[in-house]
Image (cartoon, rainbow, N blue to C red):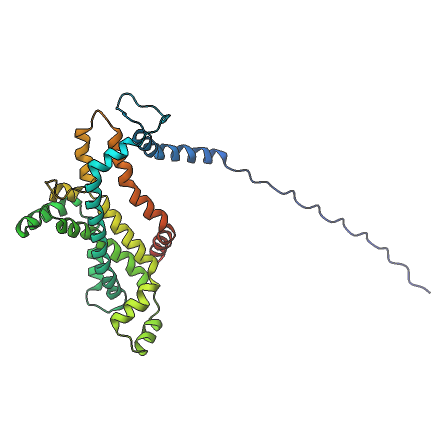
Length: 289
């Protein structure tokens, strides 16, 4: 006898693919972001707009420079050129001192077993919380006794006091991540502490070093409080004080004032554009580490 045939069950049809959902762009968020960006950038636009007009006042100023003129920049360079050079000298000197002090101090705090290392780090953090006017008043009394008032070295040292703690905290986080094995290998090869620091640690901490130096430059370049407190003559007047005094002399013609402001912003903008990738890596790396 033959076995009865087993009925075959038809296969289930394949499931239809799920419809692909198309994510719509959040146009509302984009519009809000553009509005916020426009509000933030409007003062910059207005500064450039006024600087390109021949005789702009606080009451009659066009919304767009239909006939741009660079005469205000020529007047600003004649009146504020010396102040720009003083600011450049102060900022470069302050950056140099900050880097020379903060870099080895960061290396020592990161790799040496110093007694009271935590207290030193806490003190560096606390210095960032002290109001600038308190430091300026203390420096005024000290400078008056040392004869550093109205002097270029006095302003350089004062501005360096702002950049050193910040640069030290930032560089330390990078130098702490340098492998001890690399440092020990350099020591085995005969390199001393200074050679190891210069040839091994600094190149590996380049992003933190550049970021700390750049912020030290910006602190000194934009300083107004120390310049107002420690310099009362025209002999040592940075650009921030120059623009401040310029406002009283140019109340009827704002074009030179705005041109001076544009010139004062150019070094910061150029440095930030040139070093933006180092700054991004330095800030993110310092925050993570």
